[in-house]
Amino acid sequence: MADSKRALVLHLTGSGEPAVFALSDDAAGQLGEKLAGLMQSATVEAVALADGSTVAVNFAHVATAHLDELPPNARIYGNAQPRRHGFAT
Image (cartoon, rainbow, N blue to C red; front, side, top):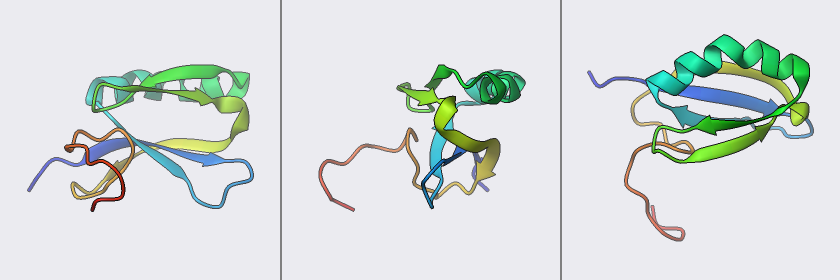
């Protein structure tokens, strides 16, 4: 069985679908310790993704946030799978 992915799940105000980002284990550990504080302070935080890129999250626009584990075949932002260009599947 393959390892599951650690993910940051953000439910944004005014949006019906959550935004889901793949995190490395290190980034998930660091973010897990300060996620509640980021939500309370409504600040902008740069979050390191599993593929080495970063995303800036404005927690002032986040209604709820949590860390989760997703199945290995999930396609989410920042995963380490090879990138494809355009609308290729």
